[in-house]
Amino acid sequence: MTRLFNEPAAFADEMIEGFVASHGRWVRRVSGGVARSTKSTPDTVALVIGGGSGHYPAFAGLVGQGLAHGAAMGNLFASPSAQQVYSVAKAANNGAGVLLGYGNYAGDVLHFTQAQERLRREGIDCRSIAVTDDVSSAPLAERQKRRGIAGDLTVFKVAAAAAEAGYGMDATVEIAERANDRTRSFGVAFTGCTLPGAETPLFTVPEGRMAVGMGIHGEPGIDETDIPTADELAELLVGKLLTEVPDGLEARGARVVPVLNGLGSVKYEELFVVYRRVAQLLAEAGLEAVDPQVGELVTSFDMAGTSLTLFWLDGELETLWNAPADAPAFRRGVVTAAALDTAEFDVTDAEAVVIPEATAESRAAAVRVLAALHAAKDVVDANVEELGRIDAIAGDGDHGIGMERGVRAAVEAATDAVERGAGAATTLHLAADAWADRAGGTSGALWGMALRAVGDAIGNSTTPDAGAVAAGVAEAAASIMGFGKAKVGDKTLVDVLVPFRDALSAAVGSGQSLTDAWGAAATVAQQAAEETANLLPLMGRARPHAEKSLGTPDAGAVSMALIVRAIHNTFAEAKAAATTTKENA
Image (cartoon, rainbow, N blue to C red; front, side, top):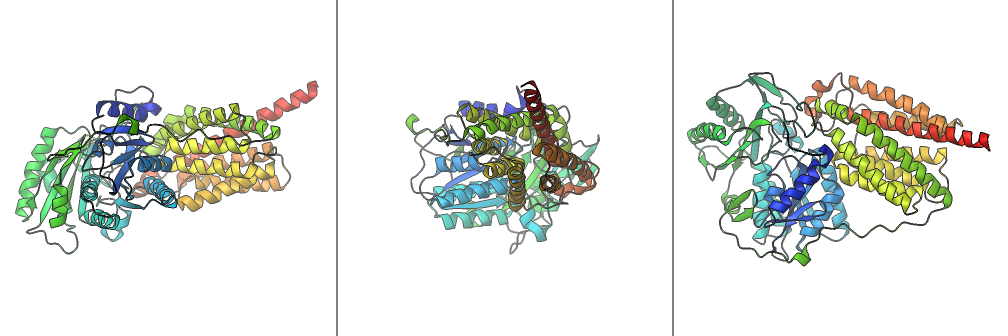
């Protein structure tokens, strides 16, 4: 279990602070993550990698000369926000464009793609490589659906070496894609990992048994078997990977980089015993092992497990793999790099947002918006552990912490906005940006979209009426479904949002007040959230383990139902207070 932490929601931030303090020779803190603290060659491609925290040495440990130029660092097991990726990319850009590298997870794809589009709009050439090395996460015919695990290392290393050598963007992308096509990984776990503050692991494996094909975010395995001997485990890992020799290659005579990766609490000595047999099996298959890597390279907190990666080389890939590199967690050869001047460090966010003018009516509405956000914060804080428990049934267990970070940031931003005289729309917009940025993950992006859509609908000039709020909720639903591609029945928050939208619009259309209409719709939302227990997830990290979630409601659906009910309570309280004031007048 994770024993050393302060506030669980602050763990990722405090970890980054300590990492930078102890590795200043290589990295500096920038908004959204870290970047090199050494000078890079001007007019070369910059590689910016990233993902959720909790996987060290990935991703920050791979930032340095000859490797990545920067790393966007999300919350625990949650993708970094688009703003984080954008900020790191801006800090790392050398003038020849930015290549974004990440594991193929829904949240990462969404956020990195958003950042890529924003960079392109600013005239920066930006491309992406989503690593898909995990053979257990989808069949070969659907390789594009596979997730990225320890194969991140091989793809990032050769792409970075190509950029360092002066390859242009097209050539660097081609190298990264070729490396991804030639990388395969397969893993097992003996125990699940435990997030800071959690009392139980994300999943458990019966005593004497082993989960086969688990994911690095704590996703349970796709199979289970008795714990083998070290030799038998090596035979399982090698045997599985040799069933997928990359197209156009033959095993006998090929040169491969084997990476035996520890996931957090398997001792190095154990890994060496396993690798002893891996080396024998590779030789027996006619493969030549080049520069084997044995150790912790992509971890999952305290998970007891290991994965094997095979990176199938050609001449160019081998040259790039062997090129010098100097990063906190990966070094080879001799690298000489000058430190950046302190004046070149950029650790601040953009200039403070100017608050647009708003009417007195809208400023009064902003106070009510802040009250609603406070109510959302209180209900999330009260249910954070339960939301994490539900999410861990078939997912990665980060939903509670992510929602907590997001809603707290939203309240903080909204409080500042109200104090500065913001109207309702501006307050919601700033809260939306803060939620999306601090929560990360898919849910952070979706809640950011929802708040922004409602803000757009109510504006800064009038007291929001029921029709404007209902229109904002409708636009929020449209934006979320357009962005995430989820639909009713996929077991996501959309299964609550759509019936809530429909019920709210119908009640408002029949002439009910906002308070009454929202209350009726909140009841519909609660029932819809409960009914997601009968669904199988068709999207996100829970999809490969759909059957495990049957009987348990979706965490995102539950949190949305809780929040809309909490918001209704603020409406009812405000209505009651107004009635009392009128009666006493």
